[in-house]
Image 1: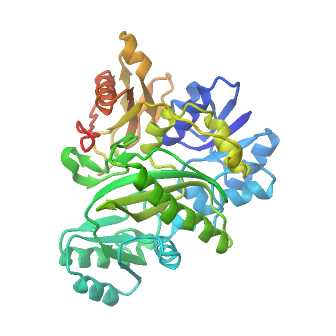
Image 2: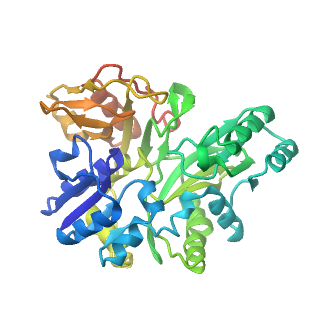
Image 3: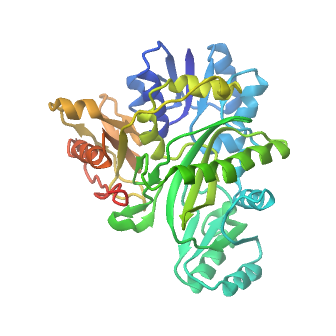
Length: 423
């Protein structure tokens, strides 16, 4: 099968790597890909979505998988489908579940899906009144639009919440994306990520993962796109999975059908578990990054078949299986991440002689490119993810960190406590 993957990060790399390992003779293409995807696929130059659809048609692409949120919110799926192409991802209308936090919160309210108490507004006065009415801090302030995972502020005081609202509504913080805001109560529990592969009617729930958003050990420092993840998490039991299915996923799929926008693609549910009850923090309409990097290696059934069956509304025909192992991913970031861009730095990976480490670890590359001599350079914020697999979280984590010790580039930084909540 000829497969096109759209995106350039670790998430897209890990999807391609998993498909490549199936040894099914697939031919993989990336638009635009990164400096390491070219090791097992063909990178094609950036095109607008209409040009890309024409290219996919001319090159007989049988399945397109969309990684990042921006193309989905921009309507790439609608463009490809209008050309009769098979593409995995939600329509532009369904992608509003991520594209607009206001749409998402109002959808949750309409279909009685559990979430935090909130107000959505473009009025600074109304936001301030709601903040003053809140009994507890911290207070959560969210920009409405896409902010690359950084549009959520956890304000530690009412004054800080008001300052954040003011900066968003003025356009100072996130431009147009912050011109409408959500202010909501802070939920005190533990966060989880769950992913449902959906075809509009059916879904397959993947093992729950836990992401680490803060830059520094002990969940200190600024929020990032994610500094590491592990799966499956022992913080979830069968009862919580069942509640998520019955109270969140099923009503969401039924609700989106009623809204005239059946949901196809990855439904990423950001959850807060409070006293054993799952509450919805947010929806995204694509895989999380780095959660995707720790879920793909756990799949023992065909990854490509899952995406293809979901994209052709035939999920009910397949059974998806996972290994009984655990997977831990540690993000290596550049020197000045997330504050500013860092100077390109050559990446050196030591040759691994230990057979066990070689067998149970790998790297998912993200912010990397090749120079004219073919050297691999760290050029992005989150550069790569060191992945370890094991029979326990502890074993998987030890292997991931041993791999970290084999990777070198100037200014590399990473957390040393990924999966600490489970261990």
